[in-house]
Amino acid sequence: MMPNQNCGQYQRTASCQQQGRPGMSFQQPVMRPRENSSMAGSQPQDQKPSQNGHGHGGGTGGNFSGMPRQQLMNHVMMAGFACVDASLYLDTHPDDEKALSYFKEKNRIYQDAVEEYSKTYGPLTIAHAHHCGTYWNWVDQPWPWQ
Amino acid sequence: MFNYEKRLEYPIHIKETNPRLAKAIITQYGGPDGELGASMRYLSQRYTMPYKECMALLTDIGTEELGHFEMIATIVHQLTRNMTMEELKASGFDDYYVDHTLGLWPQAASGTPFSAAMFQSTGDPITDLNEDMAAEQKARTTYDNILRLSVDSPDVTDAIRFLRAREIVHYQRFGEALRIVQDKLNSNNFYAFNPAFDTNGGACGCSR
Image (cartoon, rainbow over all chains, first blue to last red; front, side, top):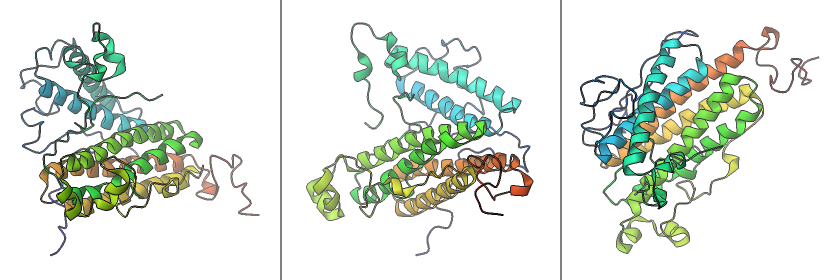
């Protein structure tokens, strides 16, 4: 049997493709999980930010209120990934204004989602553990490998 | 300072038990081109990197690699957490099990333990960044091989494809970092000296 030459339908997950050097154009990363993965059903925010019923424009933290745990976690992951990918690009292109404005937009969504998740379902970081009352609920949240 | 965020970089929900596949994938936990070595490589190299953009990049990619280290551990854990003794013995997992039970331990698929000898930190930005670019391609090749071994495990290949894509993006970024370093070199000494150490340019004794 010949090995699969393209390693199984590899799909570009994220990239900022180089178009000549050193002036590169910034391209928005898109996280595209498999259809039946846990993230199915969530619109990639890069494509249709206003069609998922939870508009992200305000940055107030209230946009995610009432969202089920897994769905909210998906927003944390998508926005968090966009920030990670954009930050690496910005490290080597610190004066790219388009990338910077993209990072700011995604980072605001990410901050709002993490804050709402921590408030509703338990802290994602120690810095968000201030929401717990008389019990240290950091130990209660499922660990990510579970 | 590092802080922990209680989530994976990309979701992993593996329902099947497959210790044979886990034994192959653990190579990205502690093998020669694995995520632990990648993280330690970049986080060690950054201290002598003389240029701010490259110092930031080594820090941020080294940090992301720690998240990938956690993803690989999660894959191995989920593939083995429900296995029976019969499955364990039939799959050849017994030689790992006898030392570690189901605990995670950084080793290559061959059983070779993780070692700092798997990476370099030379204190020379040109040398280090060339190693970093090679490291990303070597890890990409390993993920290609893992994908060929895991075609029947869609929950696994989903996460491995994500990790493979990140190797390609990191390679691109390190290439840009190398370009930044090259742009700052004295054209009379291009590639011929260590810009982090030979501050006068070409003072290593390599030319008269």
